Image (tube, rainbow, N blue to C red; front, side):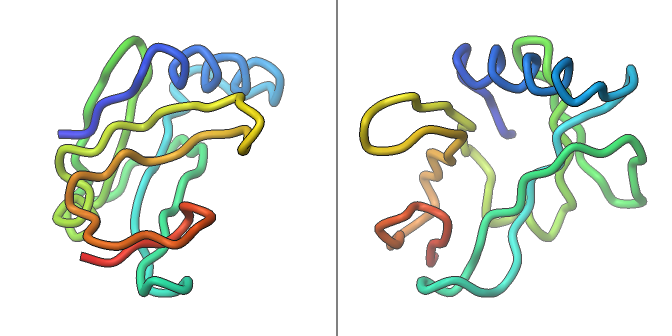
Length: 108
């Protein structure tokens, strides 16, 4: 399961309105090889589900992830920070054993 914080939910809903996304748009999260720690997070808006997608809904936001990425992201919470150390969405991933300083890549 992947969850989302209240602040992240509000931010994502606001971005969908600002970017004029059509109804049915969801957040796709995933993992790909790369980054300084070995794996990078992927986050984007999409409208089309694919075979093998796992679908979660939390706080009014639909979150879709491919099964192979879910193995690395299970239990993750998508959160939002607007603090001085950086502004934006980030992943609270309990499976990550190491992360880079920017928070965009991780290792398991």
